[in-house]
Length: 111
Image: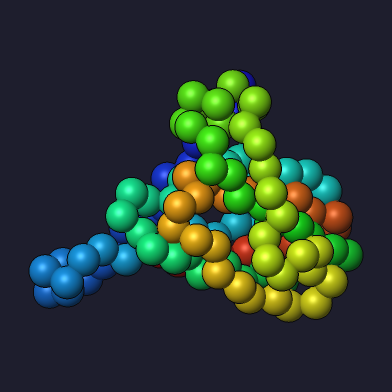
């Protein structure tokens, strides 16, 4: 069963009237990260990857129940496999994203 990760709210108190800003970062070594949930109402999430050997970001449109049960369908992000520092966006229609890494890869997500 997958553990779902929620992004950290980094909105400044005085900016909250304009919406929320969320952030997630981590380093993954020779593994697939836990799914990171895309907050409801987000139109696009920005993702930047700094790959070890290479890394692939994937997104899903599947339900939270399917993600938790490891039965979600995952799709490669538009940038494909990253072998150099890469940034791209994921549509807010996605329910979650994850990164699979060869070597030690780092990624940051904002929404």
